[in-house]
Length: 198
Image 1 (cartoon, helix red, strand yellow):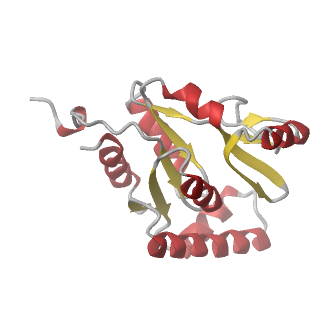
Image 2: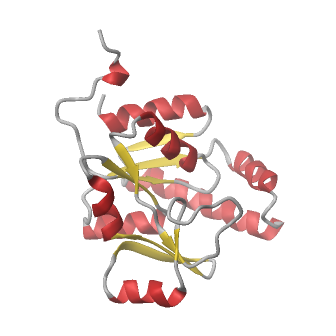
């Protein structure tokens, strides 16, 4: 008999899944694992950004890196389902990216709280919503310091933003499921079950 994780509900929900949460809570890890475990069922909507690639990032895989002028042109053409300005750079998810990635698979989007609000208001696309929250602000601070790319002022701003995001997630009713990153394997199991409808 097949295991529960290998059985997909007959009414397989192909709506995109939007995964939101503060920095360093494991969103990228969860998305990567979901796609690697089920490459025939999930794909990633790669966002566009005007920022420069970080070390190890691959254009077209991690982000679509574009000039600011091109991003502005895409906004003018109404090419995005959502876009934001963050730390003087632009980020956005294009409609074409979602369409091209579907192919009878569930498209996964990794966007922030503002992006979630934009998509929910426009209802384009109709989607399911997941929030991943840190166990506590102290754990998040430790993660950001270990990263070694942030000064103390930046860390404080990120932590304050994370606290606001968690408060919004817990009170707004915007998310179908809220996961806590205390055990990445347990979090993944819950996300997988939710995504597959099992």
